[in-house]
Image (cartoon, rainbow, N blue to C red; front, top):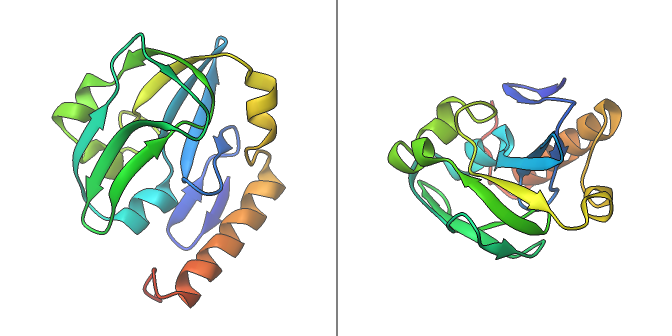
Length: 149
């Protein structure tokens, strides 16, 4: 598992470098959530809006939006496809993103259109994830977006 300070990113997931979303492969489908880095950078999540089941989403396009202490903006799909499940729990209790980002705090499940091509753009594998996490944290600190410990 990749870890820097109190931020950890499980190795089995795929990560969107820009959006800080994770993607977990589950029997041909992709469960999507906000990684720990993203939720710590955004702050306490106050509101989430998600597209309904049955909607098609394109990679890099919004499947919902998030409002948090330090971020308000779109949630952009790491893969293209159809939304087949929406997490009602996270809509009712948005802070699940902060308290259980890799468990109950997920957003949607997508049935992908072109999984192999979409996954090629995401960070995966222990060494790649660790290197990306270290570089990303350094960059955020240089920009003053993360307080020094």
